[in-house]
Structures are given as C-alpha cells and as structure tokens.
Length: 107
Length: 113
Image (tube, rainbow over all chains, first blue to last red; front, side, top):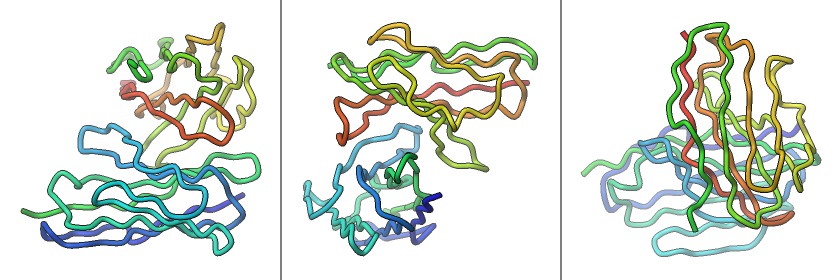
C-alpha cells in the first residue's frame, strides 16, 4: 500500500525562525491535507491542498502531486506553533496519515 | 456550526466490558470517518461511511470492533469485549463531499485496564 513519510521527525526552533516540513508519498494521491495537533490533542485543519500553493497568514503549503510531495512552510514561528504536524492523504482506496513532525518552538 | 461532536471525551473501563463511542458529524456532511491514534501505530483509519453506508472497513482491527451509522447525524463505534491494547484516542471526522477536507472531533480517550 501507499506509504506516507514526513520529515524531519523532530524539530526545535527559536521563536521567530522559519521552517519547512515535508510530506512524501510513495504513489499517486489526492485529498492532501495538513493538520496541526496541539498539545491538548486537538487536530486542527491547516490546509486542504491536493495541488498548487496556498497561504494563510504565516503558514503556506505547496503540493507537487507529480513529484509526490507536499511542503508546509512556517514563517516567524511562535510558541503556539508547537505540537505535531501531520499530512493526510488518500491513495487508491485508503486514507493514510503521515508519520508526523514534532515541532517545539522555544521562547 | 458546532463542529464534530464526540462523546464521551474520556472513558475508563475494565477489560472485558463493552465500550460505545459516539459521534455526531457536522450537519449536511455526507462522509463520516473513525480513526484511532496510538503511540505505536500513529493515526490510522478504522472505517468510513458515505451517506450512512460503510465504504471501507478494512482498518477495523478485528471482530470485537463494530461501527454503525443509523442516520446522517449519528454514528457509534463499539468494542466488545474491550482489551487493554484497545487503549487509544479515537477520533471521528466528517466531510461534506468527495474530495473535500475532513473536520475532526475532539476525540475520545479510551483507557482499558
């Protein structure tokens, strides 16, 4: 079945720094979504981005479906950005979450 | 909009007992999903419904797990009998249409002792 891997697995940043999170998938996909799981466990929608680029404030995302990856950019990071970031996608029949990137932003 | 509602938020039960988790999707959404999150396996899809009909239940771990959607505004996930390895956070999500984004509920944290 399809594999979805995220990198890096862990990331520590100083407040104000920028970062790029990556989601690689092993086969053609659609329905690509990015989520932030906050320290209380809530899954928060960031982007629905099966292709192209979107921006929302300090966050932006790009999906290149033909190259089988998606990127999430966080600029001017804040302590509230801490948590785990997941991508979710759908292969031929299955919905698969990525392995996650755990982000910690230090004040 | 109230979002996806799940109950209970926390459940502690003893091994062998029946557990029922409940979900109310966002009004008007045609798709409903049940996921489970554990440290070992991460987030994994258990089952999803379209217009109250189960479409893919290949992620349901074993016969002890069952899910129903009797109407468009309610779904249950039942575990009978429960085992300690079922301890996890169970999320419900709903989606308006095919190809759209999923919206997640707050999850139910299940502990089986």
